[in-house]
Image (cartoon, rainbow, N blue to C red; front, top):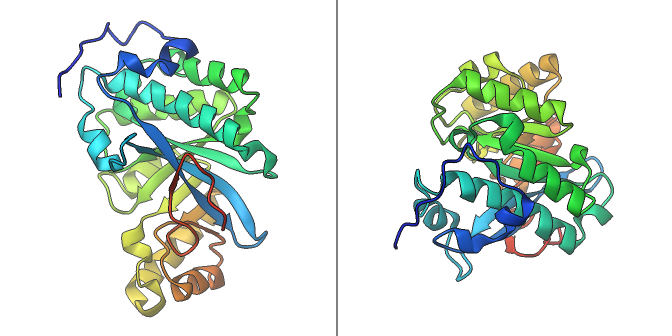
Length: 256
């Protein structure tokens, strides 16, 4: 695939530029998967997951991202997620949030790089407090102080923050010790088969206790069976996500 070089990312780009995906050497869309609040029996959020327009997986799309297009791709994902979520009626679901993954190494100046997100939220009348940004431990953070400044700026703007894939990446508890997000997502490697695994049970209960002490809401992801869900519910983890509830659907908010 040919690579198009873009201007230096320190030049801020607005909502209109981010919506024009022709500026990228590839096109993409979004699938949505719910995060279920078992106490209320309804979605607490929908996570926007990148997909190719011809059915390509997230891993395939991300393989097309490089240092030349990382900034514009990250910005375009934010705008696309807000645009689609608004069109699909997410705001009609009471208290439901939109969760967007972001690439921390694509954010150069937090106060500038958030501009397109704020413009998109205004364009689609999307309240800031209903947008959550997830940073995954899967991408190695080059500068933890920089990531902390990103989270601080997002909080200042009224946006929610989350650490994704907790327990399966580069930082783990060290990352949590440096800054505390609104949400923590327990990685599927810790929730898979948890109903019959005393080691995973002990870890999940310990993480839940930490989250209670730090006033962080805990989400269990990768739930595939009723037994996994029931065990996590019994220990007080009410926010859950996984194929047991719904698979991601392209440009659609799946029922659950």
